[in-house]
Length: 207
Image 1 (spheres, rainbow, N blue to C red):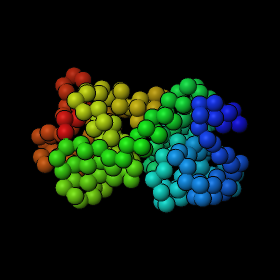
Image 2: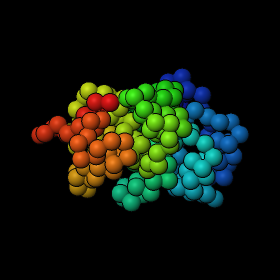
Image 3: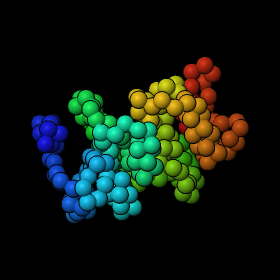
Image 4: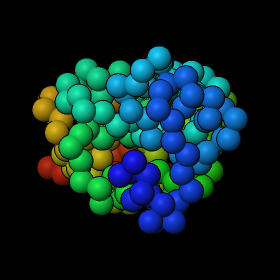
């Protein structure tokens, strides 16, 4: 109820549900612009609701939970959640994430470079009019870089944006995801022209 009050004070119309089943029904019937989904829900947990919603639509989903384990965050994101916040959280931070997610979803496509198109609404990427199979985290990574063309990001900046500020794993996981993306979008992955390495800094999208 505190979150509902805060969102409404910011001008957002909100719908609430006390369990997973009713929340799923509301999302399916009312088609909201964004879903804030608690993992710990009766009847259907948040993971199951996320899985069903993502199979049916591309609505932005923000996972909210008291759990801090990395595995829960990974599971949620792999199921198709767009972002993840753990309790206790700063309300200003959550509102910033809500605004950012709504802004991204209202911008349906990024014409990243000739032949490469990123559709934010459908979470899809096409290269020369052919669909590319990408994982949710890969999509989030290429979207971040393409939306900031010409800006170099450090590994730590990417980790904080996409994995969360409390991520404690190896920063080289960014390198792995970059390599996977290059294999899919670069004509010559060993000599990348779209996602370039800035030595001593990180990565930059040049289009």
